[in-house]
Image 1 (spheres, rainbow, N blue to C red):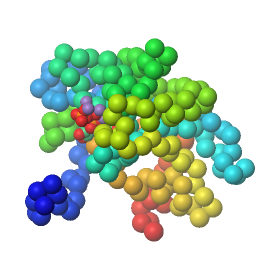
Image 2: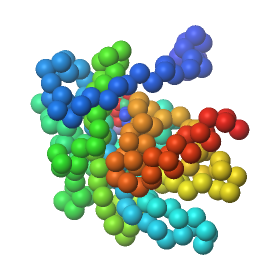
Image 3: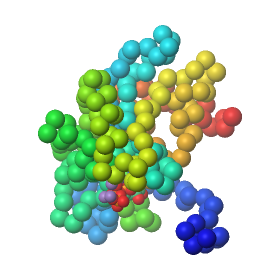
Length: 212
Ligand code: GTP
Ligand code: MN
Ligand code: MN
Ligand code: MN
Ligand code: MN
């Protein structure tokens, strides 16, 4: 049973989220020089083509199912000597086979950074806007990635609409388990890119807390 971990470890719930937002001006601060850093990316396309002729998807956003069972974004750890942007572009080649000669992230695409003192980890988040045709091609290419089937078990789209019961759709999605602060990153990106209004997000979070 060694491969399951010890019985004490097995089934232990994840630690509570303890990430705090770092101001943009402080991401290169000396304070974080000794921390591990990682960079992940919000790949999205505007999409107002109704689903089942009813629901407006607003945007198609790519997330992935990770080897550890959590949902997260493509991206990963920054190697020694590597800058954040090079790392996120390299990780997207490894994890989703992104053609970075066509689509890549720049410094300007930074959305938000978080820090966990306890985990000694700084998490940087970037955006990559594409059109719907390219997003579909990115999805197709993802299953051919080097890390597909190991680190990454699949690429998914996030449902942003909510059904008539005020629960299925986005609120249910938010009830999944997300790695690191990726749930906060998703909410921050939706707000700052004006994909959903703060009121719409609050409604989904409230529905979520009903715990149906
Ligand atoms: P390896 O190549 O196996 O080392 O993985 P990686 O470099 O792809 O790293 P990974 O994407 O797992 O990210 C490193 C750490 O960042 C993880 O251990 C998580 O704690 C955290 N993490 C992973 N994905 C996300 C994400 O989408 N958002 C946030 N905020 N954190 C993440
Ligand atoms: Mn990764
Ligand atoms: Mn990786
Ligand atoms: Mn890596
Ligand atoms: Mn790897």
